[in-house]
Length: 146
Image (cartoon, rainbow, N blue to C red; front, side):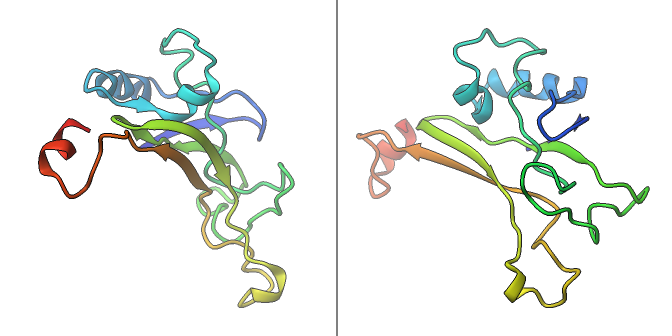
């Protein structure tokens, strides 16, 4: 799910688009939860102001956060480097134990050219889930319950 939230700095508070909050509200009505709020929200009430406040940048590498700047892809458009909190992980029917944003930097000795520093202009988002004990991919009835 792509949210297109702006963020002024790597460690800044995301600035959600009203449409993203509305769509998440609709998806919550279908039983889906958003991973970063679930893990980082510390039992905060879900409101349009809080539900996207725990995102971290998942687009753009500006050189903040201990990761080198990416200048070939991220700056397409107006030419400036920027971060945005673009990607949400939604889940239901499993227990979420952790979520983290991971840079996709190419090691220096494996780059096809020195200016190609990253695999993509997006970060990877890794979520760790624990399947319910009753779940078995081989039993159709149990799959529907999970």
